[in-house]
Length: 279
Image 1 (cartoon, rainbow, N blue to C red):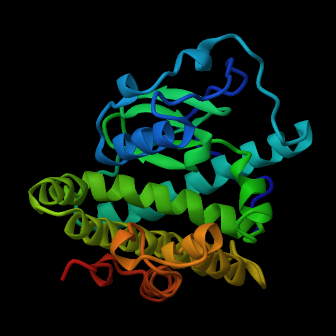
Image 2 (image 1 turned 30 degrees about the horizontal axis):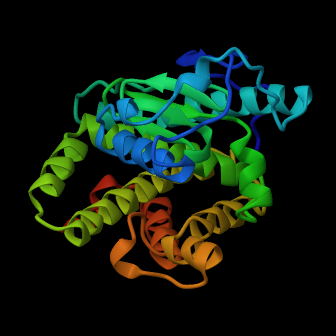
């Protein structure tokens, strides 16, 4: 991507360097993490159900990134956020509306949010309660080492996807889906709504890609990096990697094929009207 020397967003809150520590859920580490993850998704503070005392224990956090990598990813993330701002300002402006961008919070390991305690192990996430995108820059290495999705554009896709959730929030889609999930009556039905929400965010990320491609920001091979990233975070692939098989009823983000298809849909059309998996 052509990002060096370009405008960086000022809508960034840098919490890196704050003290951090281990994570212990009252029901066990993974149980605690799942509780926090569910809370963050539904915009509910469930941090009271887990023991987060160690987060503020004063232990120093050792980043997996070098100082140079931190600096580069810091600048890169701000440039990508700035590009999403321009892309969505153009869309909202066409209908006479004003786009209010999210704030991106950079942090290490764990941080407090209006949706509960955010954990880097969750990956980047959006909290609708405070309209912030939370990002631990070390996820860049996790994508490459654990998900086999490397490259600047792969990381940019992730940021654009989380900004897509913010756009859903501004348009009133996110709260409506959350209400529908609460009325759904079954976990399987709620999961299906979650999949559609995530696929729409992928399509919205594609709209950022359309803008970036149209304006000469993307270089040869960049789109392939984004495509690989979209496929890498499919529920079917992640479940097969972790447990050897997939359970479709438990999917919350969509299959690799679905995520790629909806990202490409937004990329090719640049039209938000084409991003409606709910129809």
